[in-house]
Length: 400
Image (cartoon, rainbow, N blue to C red; front, side):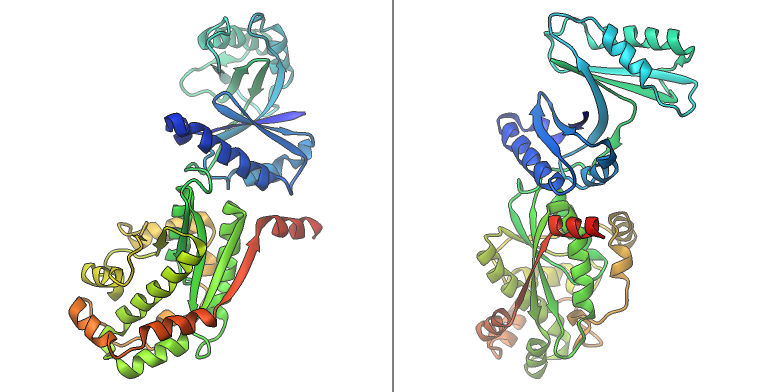
């Protein structure tokens, strides 16, 4: 049986709340790995161990580890018995030499950690003893600064684990520790990245998409479905609310002057999303706004739009430029879907010259001519709910 040792960083800084965060990470790992292979997940001292029966499952497990928030790095290891009161490294040294990688290398180093100071030998003692043994049996040189290979050793009695490679996880905090947030997702580049960044901080994302039907096609909805499918690989389960907004926009066009329509659209979206947040027991709304990027994202208009709801409005991209956001979208894997041509409600009934500095008294006066509660109710009664499950998707992929 092989073991994967999973390490975290921020969780270790949580003091008295550490056990809660660790529990959430273990719980999520069990859910994420359940459809992939027969595995056993348990918390050890300062780390988490995932035991794998089938070594062939490692490539799929590796990909899933990279999508579990809270993991800073992980290693596929082997283990030999190691007791507190018997710090003899003979078995460990022989095992390390017998499983050395076959790829060429000229230099190496040993990096050792012990989980408990009761183990008689220090980490440095372990490194020196194993290093001398490997050098003697292989003829390779030791390089502590820039080695070709690093032998990783972790002593967690009653076992000692060894490996030769450490992979990077996504970091952040475990899913669910940050509560639930509503993420407005448009199908463009920005909103999936904004959702991802909040998910990385432990938030569970519930998605809301405003579409332009009956005036526009379903293309934007299909893009959003693809984006939510991608993001569901990180949180395992997602809910997407599809809100028909085209008819509502047409009613605003009839009664509102063109320059302020974009701000009115956004204010109404926030009101609708706030009702969904109450139903979903979410504590905040999240958008992909970047300061100054478009007319609705100027400081003045952001302030006016915020006034439409008492919920916190999270804008994780607010200080990023388009190049930075695009780079993160490419790393996430959402970029290619985002740039596919489409028509969404953000392009429907948009004036040529939207006002960039709206004033709240004027907006409130214009809204007096609109049946705001009626429009909100209209949107909610016609909305659709789509459920996404990562386990079902994995099963379908496996069957194929």
